[in-house]
Image (tube, rainbow, N blue to C red; front, side, top):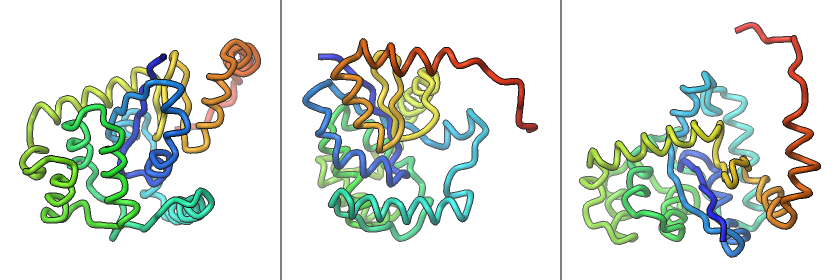
Length: 211
């Protein structure tokens, strides 16, 4: 069974929604959860985050609520957004490749709508996934370094947004890319011939946006 890297950040409602339906592909590939810092991608590519554009932030939350209803996924907005994603990301790094516990962290934020920045609530979250001193654990320099390394690995693989699944050097970005990934897994040869190769051979135009 092939292995795919699943890159995510808890700050994204789309990543939470994907985590809730990820079982659609877990029986077809081995999925390796890779928490990364979305802000690291934004800084690398020089992009603004959705929360930095008021109208985009509003739409993202509206769409997330709509998608949750469409997919019948429990959803409750957190007390505020953006929040500091570093503690839950480091917590996820500490538990290793455990998709069930990763989803539990997502649920804490986006299903129960709890305050991830509250030390007491964060401690309670840690205990619920078997970590007695979550506030202390996430200060470990090793976890900080591993999170940075995973973010850099994502960038080296061409990841530009979250959530993204990477398999065979092919990127599948966003909640709605799961069906595209399933199509790839069903017939990789046809997908490569009819999708990947035409997209890769598209010539670059001369028109450039001024920075």
